[in-house]
Structures are given as structure tokens and as C-alpha cells.
Length: 162
Image (cartoon, rainbow, N blue to C red):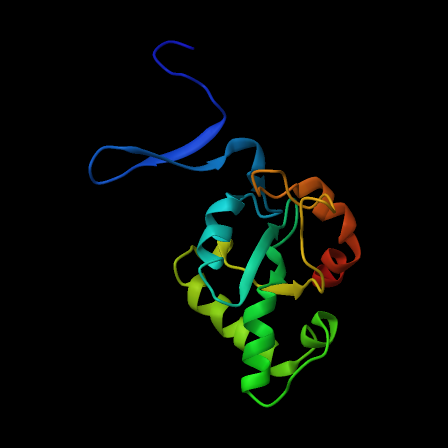
């Protein structure tokens, strides 16, 4: 407690009924090279409303723009591709499918409209594996282990910024 405030490290907003809604953790926020602050969890929660996206991690600390690593919703995309006449035998193969990449781009552009221009996802890369607790991507409460994911996919992240 400092004065009349309880400092938890959380970021929130007051809804129409006067209730506090926790939307992010202060320590997860990052600043772009342009000096704009981004709360990635807010963006991720909106993007995960897409049927194509199982998990997403927004990155961009110290970078010009935010980008995202996306673990697709495997069941959905495999069925979607099969229904489109382009069945895939593996997630890796599916993640390279042009029609899927275009559909995801459209989804991201649609959700981007809810954010300021500095918060919008400009580029993304699909991760051809399922993020799991056992592999260290997620905590037991299904939260992203950002540091682990960032380290594991450092090359993909660099590719988005090259």
C-alpha cells in the first residue's frame, strides 16, 4: 500500500458498472522504438477470438512495430484446409499454405481495427508446433512463458524484423 493505492503490478480498467477489470500485467508491457507503450495481453486476447488462433504472443520491445508469433488452432485449420480442397498431412505443411496465411492476415487486419495504429500487428509468423505446459511454453494456468517462447523462436522473430 502506498497512500490509498494497492500496487499489484496489474493494469486494469473500470467498466460501465464501476467494476475493475484486470487487463494486463505492468511487467509484460513493452515500449516500441518510437516510444509507444503496448500491453500485449490485451491484443492477444482480442486476436484469440479468431477460430484460426490457439495461442499468440505479441512481441516488439524496442522495435519499430509489434509483430506476433501464432500457434494456429490445429483442429480448426486442418479441417478448414481439407474443406477448401487443400488437405495437409502435418501442421508444418499447413503453416505454409498460402490460403491459410491469407485467411489469417484478413483476421488480423479485422481485429487490428480495434487498436491504435502503433498497437496493430504488422507481421506475423505461424509456429508449426503446439505450445504446451510439458514443453515449457505455458504455465500450469495456461499463461504464456514469454521469455521461453521468445528465446525458442528468436530466429522467427528476427525474420519478421529483417
